[in-house]
Amino acid sequence: MTPPVILIVGTVDTKSDEIGFMREQVLAAGGQPLIMDVGVLAKGHVTPDVSNTDVAQAAGVTLQQVMDIGEENSAMALMAQGASALTAAMCREGQIDGLLALGGTMGTDLALDVANSLPLGVPKVVLSTVAFSPLLPPERMPPDLVMVLWAGGLYGLNSLCQSALAQAAGAVVGACRVARAPRFARPVVGMTSLGASCLKYMVQLKPELDQRGFDLAVFHTTGMGGRAFESLAAQGQFACVMDFSLQEMVNQMGGSVVSAGPDRLMGAGRKGVPMIVAPGATDLVDYPAWGRVPERFAGRPSHDHNRLIASVGIDADMRREFARELAGRLRQAQGPVHLVLPMCGIEEWDRPGAPLHDPEGLSALMDELDRCDWGGVQVSRIDAHINDAAFVRQALVVFDDWLARGLVKREAP
Image (cartoon, rainbow, N blue to C red; front, side, top):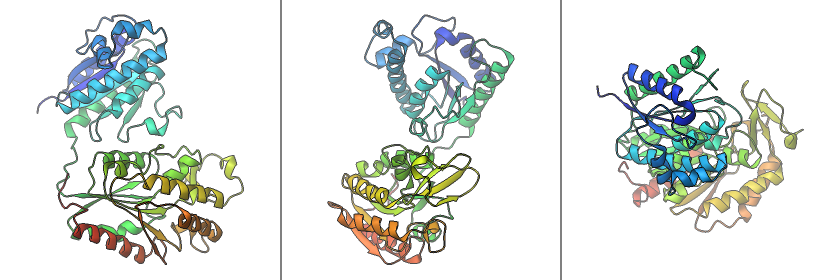
């Protein structure tokens, strides 16, 4: 088996011992290390394969210009730009198989940009002193990122540090050895859902789409799932999207940490991918179940899904705000868009007798959706709940029409 090439990204000027040790561990695990130096202060005692001069040049500046900035944050932002451009190019040209980066807050900041420059499915491991920290915003996190806490490693190559470095090196080499890039042998329909208890349509839609020759990929809209969905949609990897769970948009509006970023719902539209959309689960904002209900929503009905995540119902004004935001985003789409509105409910917990049942709020949402300017977006209304069979039938009516007209392609990308 050809040894996987692992790009090691770090500041050689301040982390030579650690980078040198990681190089040894990558070799010991059967990988081929390739070191990229993103430091700007001085030269370390490890000779990089990609110099900091090369990195600066990829950002359109000289290393001296970076050093002359005199302010670490701005200097490292330029180095992040150059490192990301070089890493993406090396991946496209087949020169690397995986990424291993390390750092404190500064190095992690840079590493996230570099990791985001790589496609979904390319192994990415970041060794960080702030792994899993709330300092890391969800929109900066690649959906398939692996993070290892750099415990005891801020200064000096002690045994704790070596343990973390070796674990990270083994993780990325092992991942590269067994990684399988998505093959897309059949065209894929990308779908969103909030689990299988809140939204259930995928259970009926999967066999129907399979019979039509399409694979179905369902993404859990709890932040990172939406990030992965948007990334693949923006790359044009889907023949069509059925974006039926838009709850991450409401989370973003409500300031929740369970966010997919401000560009949710935009990836497929910008790429011209056909979109069938529904406002599933847009009546609630998620928050950590182990915390408190956000002050803005105090007193509103809530539901603890498990010990990790809970949801609180939003009021009528916020539902109207969401409706306007939905229309604004869908009007920007470059391909066909069809919005299906289930008039009797948009998630399982809003049914009569359920904890988030709010007929006045649902009425406000549908009323505002009626008032919106949809441009070229087609809108259909059905007298059913989103988890009813009638919703599935309507989605298939739209899909089959687009398939017959050639708007949805039968060929894999």
